[in-house]
Every structure is written in structure tokens, then in C-alpha cells.
Image (cartoon, rainbow, N blue to C red; front, side, top):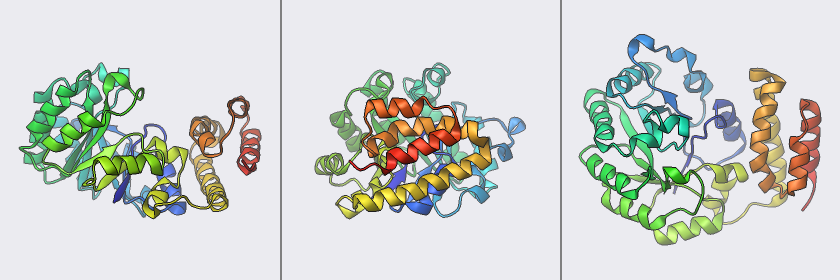
Amino acid sequence: MHFTLAPLHGITNYHFRNSLNRHVDGFDLAVTPFLAVQETAKLNVRKWPDIQPENNVGLEVIPQLIGNVPTHFTDTIRELQKLGYRRFNWNIGCPSAQVVRKQRGCGIMPFPERVEAVVKAVTEQTDCAFSVKMRLGWKSAAEGLEIVERLNAYSLDFIAIHPRLGVQEYEGVPDLTAFGEMHRRTRQRVIYSGDIFDLASYRQLMEAFPDLQSVMLGRGMLRNIFLAEELTAGHPLAEDEKRERFAAFYDDFAQTMVVARGEHGTLSLLKELWHYFAVFFQLSEEELRGLLKINEYAEFQGRARELSAMGR
């Protein structure tokens, strides 16, 4: 099985990816949070630190792109190829309202002809390996089915499928029946993405789809940064080992973020992450609320270390 680190906008930046890669095993690949494609005249890829080669060492990275204009994709890909990238991913699954209203992300899924136009331009006019990250559809799984059938005419790197509709965002349960139908109808290599949080959910997925060879981990990885290792091993790691290694990862990441963004910017991101880390440390709602009320960096980190050292 191959495990891919999912793109989580605002979270899995290169600082996070690099710290994770230094302290955690199991990931073969990472997809970056999305970058908006542009025409050549407006492009300056050096303003995108997240995909600079010097910032990404040790783990293969695929830049993720978002947009809906074919020429903007070909222009952007050609510029990024100058940095050495050959593989690119297109986000047509983001359910954010501000993205969807521009017919980007999941907002383009009701327009399969526009999806095909981008894929056709990229595959015919560039020599890159192109992939798509999608949902079942925006409002209907029929949207995704038409897209995967149209894309069968093209040779893609892979299709990553999140088994929810865009209107659901992250609510409700994954629709594995609809996912299975899309998987059956596509000729592309499929990466499953969605709600793999532990060994039990992974085993349930593999029982249903034993031919799957790739899984993308996102929110489940934030709840347990060792998830890919445990899925590979087939059993949980020792709790003492995980706590010790988590502390090393956390200190590494926080220190690199402080250098890059300062304490105020780092504190904002750490508060977002602790909604997930709280699951790992089995914090109560009261403990998490108390931590998130702290607005001074050193005090926050001191309390975070106290909570992460508590046995459960």
C-alpha cells in the first residue's frame, strides 16, 4: 500500500511536511495545498515558497493547482517545470464557498466539459504527469460519474476521490457505494481519500476494495501523525514511543514556524492543529477550551506540553 499526505489548506505547508518527514515514516508522497494558476504574464512562481525545491527535501512533492482556464494551467505548469517538477495535481474537490462560487474546486464539477477541456489541454500541450483530486460531485454523484468517464480518454497519473458531495463538506459518512461505482467506471489509477482515522476504518475500506493500492491521509493523520506507520505495520505503536516522538516532531515544527512567521502567526496555526492533536491526547472539551483561550505563545506552549505529558 502507498500512503499520500493530503493537501490541507493552511496546515500542511512545507514546514509541516518537512517536520513530519523528519519524525514520521510511512508516506511515499505529499500533495501541496493548492496554488491558483495564472497566465504567464502574471506568474512569478518564486513567490510560492511552498513549492520551491530547496524547501522540499526528502519526500516527493506534487504541486496542487486550482483554476478553470486551460491556458492558465499550461502556462503555470510550464513555469513550474523549470523548477524540476514533472507531476501536477488539479483540485476539483474543494467545497469552500468562496472557491465554489468562482467555479473552481468542486464548483467546476457540474460542468464536465470544462473539466475535460483543462485535462485535454494539459495532456496534449505539456509533457507532465497530470492527476485530479475530486469528490463524488457538487450536488450529485452523477456529476463525478460523467467526469471520470470523460477522462477515460486521457492518460492520467491518478484520480484521488473523496467519497462525499461538495455540499456535504465534511459532514455525514463517506458514500462507499458511490465511490465504488466511480472506481469501477474509471480506467485511471485511484487513490482513496476520506475518513481513514484508524486501523478499523482502514481495514473496513480494504475489505470493500481489496484492489486499492493507494490511500490519501489528511485529517486522520492530524489526529494521529503515526497513522501511516500503524497502517503499514498492521498494529498500533507503543503509546510511550508515540508520545516521545510526537514531542520531538511538535518542537521541531513549532520552532521552524516561529522562525518563519513569528510567535503570533505560529500560535494561530498551533491552535488550529490542537483541535486534532486533542484527539491524539484524549483531551476533554474543557481541557481543549482552556488551552485555546491562551493568547500568549510561551504560556500556550507550556500548557500544551503539560497536557501532552498527562497519561490517560
